[in-house]
Amino acid sequence: QVQLVESGGGLVQAGGSLRVSCAASGRTLSIYSMGWFRQAPGKEREFVARFVWNSGITNYEDSVKGRFTISRDNARNTVYLQMNSLKPEDTAVYYCGAASTYSGTYRNVASYGYWGQGTQVTVSS
Image (cartoon, rainbow, N blue to C red; front, side, top):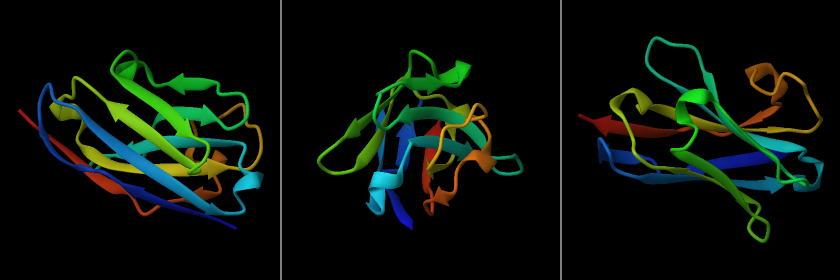
């Protein structure tokens, strides 16, 4: 089992920055990749970014490219999502997920077997 705990959400004005964290514990050696997703009220959970554990490969959803950066702290088994130039449409609950195997459909929620509880990010206009 893998346990994930997100932190770092909050309220920020448009144009501001925020960093959210996801700490993994348990069977972390079984992790292949970790992803950040977000879910706004009334909408489905959507892919934001992914970090492949051993290779360091990253992937981003088009609307966050150039603004968001996903990174990993090996020693802390923690993945970060640095969010810059935030927009009101970035407002959502941000979730991190962990996948144990490679998946060609890494943008899909179903590709991740473990999830954190989520952290709220609110961007005011």
